[in-house]
Length: 590
Image (cartoon, rainbow, N blue to C red; front, side):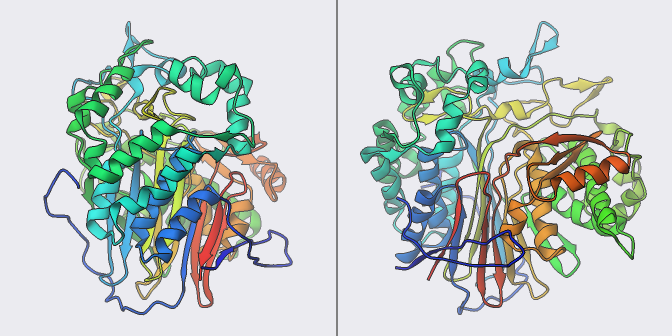
């Protein structure tokens, strides 16, 4: 099997590639909803297969599954199981995920919503104490922040839907690395050694996580070989018993006991864990130019924001556009979109979310006429009024909850042309810092609004029993005018995911850059009154200067936390991009 690392230079000289050896049963039986086919797929696919993810060892695990005849879903499970071991700061089986799966033969796209849920005993005052909201660090490091781990349930539901490989085989690479040991990467080591991180996190205080990440009181150094036999044992149980190897009384009791530890014990209990259900949904898709953009529906922001920003960008762009015009259109499209997203997007199973209205062309026409002055604070629009159905903006109070960046993204196209875009998370770096059975628990519930009301109005994203917190995760598939898969992308990065993925869509599809060029370019995030510009990357200083001249308040960033992983389908085959801010690669299987 030949594995080729796709290396794309940012330099204007163009693109080069080189090859090198790689680094080292669901609970519910209800029918799965699917979209109407947008194409009639054919059996032949000549573009090849590729995986782009955050660690070469995880990508190698997925390629081994593809080479043995596994599907994109099979490979995604294998990739993520390894990422949970070698990139524990970003995701793992103690968290959750959204997965988009495109089946080329049928033309159907399906969303697996594996978002964590609040305990059934939770209410809107989950993070309120003595009449005031908890500060973020206290909430993050408390038991109150832990939602029901849901990744393993997503594995099971997705594999039942379109898996081809033997279930147990998917965990062999991760089990092997867990039992024999893996080499600690510089990024993991740098996180652990950061004084700033150790000041706010209890990772080095919790007895189990401290013993694992700080043996003899010292952070794991880059190059150290670290095994995790407890994780290997957990994966063996999952491999042998299916998802019941995770969702059983013993594991649920162990999780609940850790959640109940101080400080601020949480409410997640055995019943919450054992009763978790993956939601299988249709994607939220919209038209833009000659493309169809599909991403996850609420509680994910993806389908809303990744359709709004490109469409608003086009509406705000002058006919004869300069570079400054393009920059301003991108920033203003973000400002309008973030304001709407913050106001309206939440768990659509529990509150009314006007997702289709927000991407309706008539609303986008109206919203494009509401650009705010650079110094103004962007306010949400009113799709109900714009579409002639009565005002809806007053349903909710205005919310600016900040998502944290403990997340990873996987893009896959398999040898049959099926595609997976999967974004997985444990929320903040190293999640809740509480470790059980070899994996870290999430702090996903801090994605809820801490203050449940504002100006006497409830917030759409306030906590509630069994509710899924709003997410910025935007696993995205783009189809061309023939309905064929054209682009697979997504990124980690908390609320900045919205901007990172939108930059990728516009960069590749509107500005003509390669996936790698876009990944390496400066990030620009325009949420609220301040525009954050990554001045340490090419194009950043010039963008910051132009935006200041246009009157925007600019905050200079020396580094962003994007981890964009992209696959573009071209006439010549697949072209990958991996974000240099992380340790990922895009690798083709030939």
